[in-house]
Amino acid sequence: MKKVETKIKAKTSPQKVIRAFLDDKMLKEWWGVERSLIDRRVGGAYALAWDIDEGGMKYVSTGTIRLYNPKGLLVIEKFVYLNYEKPILGPMSLTIKAERQNDLTNIYICQDGYKEGEHWNWYYEAVKEAWPIVIKNLKQYLERETM
Image (cartoon, rainbow, N blue to C red):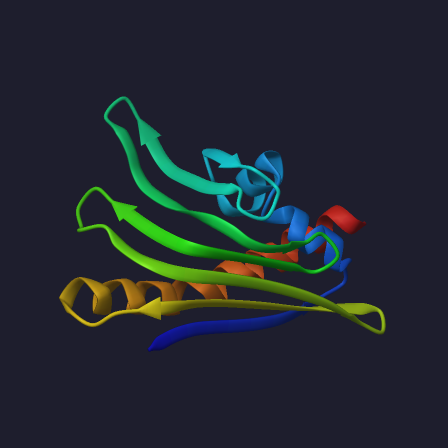
C-alpha cells in the first residue's frame, strides 16, 4: 500500500511536538483546525474539523488513538477522511514520532493505508503535496513558541 512520509528537524522538545497534535489551541494556531475532539488515551477519539460554516464542516479527519506516549509517539488508527465533495476514505493510519537528537528533535509523520481508485489517487496526491508544507508550518510554529 502507498504511504506518505515526511521528516524535519526542529529546535523544540519531542513532548511539544506530540502536544501540538493533541492540544485544541495549538492545533488551531499551527494547522488551522477549527474544532477538535481528542481523548488523550489509548482507545480515545481523535477528530479534527476545518472550514466550518453555517452549512456544516467541509473537511474532517477522525480516528482512534492506538499508541500514545507524550514523550514522543502518537499513532492514530482507523483514520478516516471526510470531504463534502468526495466519498468517505479510510481506514488509514497516521503516525507522529518525535525523537531528541542533540539540540534538535527529529519529527516524522507517516500516513498510510491508501487504497486504489480515482478518489484514493486524488487524496494520496493531495496528502503527498500537503504534508511537507504542514510539517514546515509545524516546525516554524514550534520554534517560534520555544523562543
